[in-house]
Image (cartoon, rainbow, N blue to C red; front, side, top):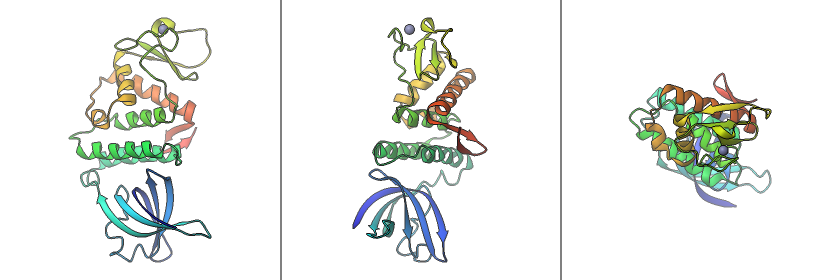
Length: 249
Ligand SMILES: [Zn+2]
C-alpha cells in the first residue's frame, strides 16, 4: 500500500551506514516513524527534506509483513530559515515540539494538533522578538485541545462572566471560579489569577500563535499564568518540564 501525504519532520536518526529513520507527524496519522532507505546517501531522492522542522510531501509505502512505513519520495514544501539560525527561537520551537511529543497524539485529534504545530512554527519564524511566554501558551493550548484545561469564560460555580476580574483555578477539579466562589474548605491546590493572568489564559485557549508571540504581559501576570499551566499540566497530563525535557510527573 502506498500513499502520499504532507508531514512535519520531528526527528531524523541514522541507522546502518546510509539509512535513516524519520519521526513524522501528519494531519491524518498523527506521529509515526518511517524509514528512508539510502536516505543519507540518495541526496537526489530526498534532497534537503530530511531535516527536523521541514514541511514535506512524502510518498510512503507501508509494508504488508512488518507493517513498517518506508519513505519512497519527498518534496520540500517549506522550511523555517530564521528559526534555525536563532538559538532563542529554535529553543522555543524545540520546547513546544517536546511537549507535543510527550502528549502522544494518535490519529484522533491529529489534524488539530498538526495545524497548531504549523501555526506555532510560522509564528516563531515571523515574529520580530517572540515572547518568552510563547511555549507556555502553546502548552496551555495543547492541554485545552486534549480536554485537560478549563474553559475560562465563566465561573464554573455561579456562571458569572470572569473577564477582566480576579479568578481562582482549582487545580485538581480543573475548574475556574470567580473570587466569590472560592471555597477554602475544599481540599486541593488553588492558584489565584489576576485579570492579567486570566487574559493570558484566554489568549492561550482562544487566541492565535502570532498574538502569543507578540504578548508582553507584566511579570506578576506571567508568573501566575505560568504557575497555573504547570500545575494543570502536571496534575492532569502527568507531565513536568525537568532538565531540558518533559518527564512523567
Ligand atoms: Zn462564581
